[in-house]
Every structure is written in structure tokens, then in C-alpha cells.
Amino acid sequence: MITKFTTVYPGHVDLPDRGQNATPANERRFSNEHLASVFAKTEAIAKTLDRHGYDTLWLAEHHFQHEGYEVIPNLLMMAVHLAHVTKTLRIGCGFNIAPMWHPLRLAEDFATADILTHGRTIFGVGRGYHSREVETFGAPIIDQNANRELFEEQVEIMFKAFNNERFSHRGKHYTLPAEVPYRGYALKELTLVPRPIHLPVETWQPIVSANQRGIDFMLKYGIKGAVGGGAATMEHNPIHAYQEAAARAGLDLKLGQNLMVGIFFHLAKTREQAIREITSLYEEHVKMFAPLGFMPGMTPAQIAASSRRGGWEAAGVPTVEHYMKAGAWFAGTPEGLIEHLKRLEERYPGLQYVNLSTSIGTPQQVMLEQFQWVAEAVMPAFQRR
Image 1 (tube, rainbow, N blue to C red):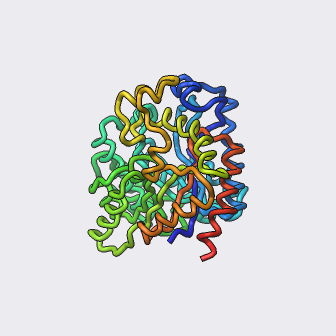
Image 2 (cartoon, rainbow, N blue to C red):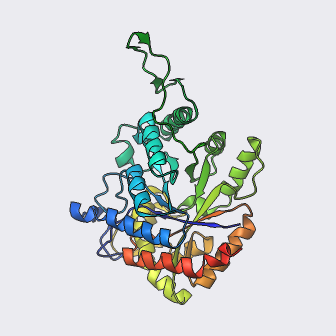
Image 3 (cartoon, rainbow, N blue to C red):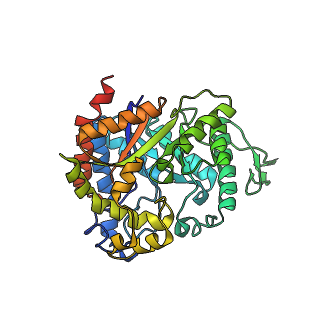
């Protein structure tokens, strides 16, 4: 049963134009002053969500994006700040890209945030998807097998550090501690200082496929799954695969339990108005994410067309209505959104978390209005229960 409402804000600054007839994604470049405006925007969003009873604001870690789409580089620093200007809102790391970190530095920084925010920072890990980011930091992403291998060893290390007063690790990529003398003795163990106070550490990871190895790995460490914003939203398979992996791990989970399903949404007085208003925002999303493989079903020719100004219809680029039929996007009235979410509840009886996100490129004022509208007209239909 849906009881917790969340949103993902990837960290886009306000754009001067939006949609297929606007500036192509690869041609966007903003001043440092405008890129830095993301912090005030994030604070405004957090305060609105906090005031209206949302459970979690999920933020995304990204780097080097002069295009202005995802420009928050450090989620844990952001979480500490936001916890000090809100009262109950949780701040989710959606997600820290582990291959760009040393695992013990990430574990230390999270533990610090956990303590300073009194448990309101939620840990999240991901493998990454921007070659510009991951490879620049010296980790593999083009080689997916190498990326997964590194990621899995890093997560193993972090959970050892969180859950044990003393630990050591010997693996392919890391030998911890370093085998060196220290103050008159041979170093054999480490202690994470500080360790998180709120244990076990609630941890989330994106699910973008039904890969058995990946989902079995999540269940091994009790990691919850965020489904949405890409191919996973379009399929029932990842949700069923997570339940099946839980059963293999000896857990009896209801379908949808320990998962969060994401939907891009836009509300208006009529469905027709909502579709008109969301179209340019959806097109901006396509410009950003189609070349990265996050628009399921698009052909190489359609992806190439999305990188150019205009002419999408002739190239057959899918419209927002196409993805609305699949359930990944919603445009309509608050009453329609309530019905949409209740259908999700019927299909996934264990579902507790729903992630309602505005499309990348949505202006700050529109985002704040949309979140308030959901809180006033949609959330009560679920929270009254």
C-alpha cells in the first residue's frame, strides 16, 4: 500500500528554452554563476517538500555537466545542509556513484552525514552511466563487466566497515588495511571512524534491468531497489525479479515490497492541457537521456534525431503519449493520478514508496507548484488510510 511519497531531483538549473526546437543538449553551456544556482533551487524544493509532508528528496551525484542538467557533485554535503533547513524531510543519495569514490572515503562521509543529520540521510549506491564522469575519475564504465566487478567489491567493503568495529579486506582491487608497520606494530585491521549510528544502514540502488546477478547481489546486502526513470519502469520484470531474488535469499516479500516505483508526472486542470504543458519538458528529457540508453525502444536513427533541433515527428521519435501508455509518464488531473497510483497498488500490493518526479528541465516555480498540488490533492487519498 502506497504510504510514502518521494521525488528525484537530478539537479538541473532553469533552462532558457526547452524542447526539440530549443538548443540541442550538446550545445548547452552555462556560466558558473548560473550552474551554482542549483543549490538555492535545491533548497527551495526541499523546503516545499518538507512543508507538505513528503518522505524523501532524492538527489543525484554528477560531475562536469556544463550543459546544466545534473550539476550536484556532492550529495552528502548537500544532505547535511538541507537537514539543517528542514524539519522531517529525509535526503536520499540517489545515487552516490561508488566507482568514482574510494569506498572507505564514501563510508566515512556517509557516516558523518548520518550523525550530523540524525539519521535523515539515506544511503544509495550506483554504478554510474556517464563515461565522461566515471572514466575521468579513473574507473571503468565502458567495460561493464569491469565496472560491476569493481562496484561489488566496493559495496562489500562499505558494509564491512559499517557493520564491524574491526575489519579487513583482501580483494582484486583493494587490500585493506595497507600492509605496513604502524607505531610499532604490524597493521592488520581497520576501524571506520566514525561509523554510522543508525544501523543497519538503509541502502538503495537503482534497478535498470532484471539482471539476476545484480539483483541477487542487492538482496545479499539487504539493498532496496529504485525502479523507474528508464527501461525498468516499462517492464514488470524487475519488480518480479526482485521478489524472486528475495525468495532465493530466504525472504518472503510481497510484490513491490522494498521497492520504489518512479513516474514522471505533470498535473493540469485537464489531461489535454497537461499533455501540452509536459511535451517540451519530455522532449528535453529525451534530448538528455536518449543518447545514454534511457529511452527504451528508441532506434539509433531516432536517438540521432533527438540530438538535432526539430524534425522529430518525421524521424518517428516517440511522443510522451507513447510512454504514458506504458506507465512511465503521467499527464493529467489529480483525480487521474490518484487512479493511476491505485492501479499500481493493485498490481504491486507490497509497494510502499512512490517517486513522483517532474521532468528534467522543469523550471523551479513549476516544480514547486506541482509538488504542492500533489500534496494537497493526491497524497491525502492515500495518507488518510
